[in-house]
Length: 108
Image (cartoon, rainbow, N blue to C red):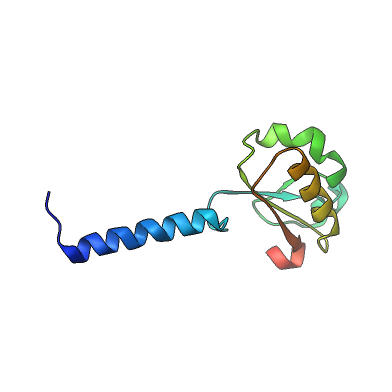
């Protein structure tokens, strides 16, 4: 198969866009959304595709969700404080692609 310079340039451009988005932790990649608020708070309302693991249980429960240390993990709580605590815990455990997305109002 022979392609022209224009098609080749497009292919290279798309390739570099994909690499850049992966390196930047692009939010459009398959993310695991975790609501780290209490069960009662979660039941009152949450992001549609989020699972609930309270920040006090994250260390014991994360392996039930993923053991992939490079998984794209997005955390949120009410305002971001507990998500920050959970993020620090996961990073201490070796997870490398963890993001504190702030509060529920930030992610809806």
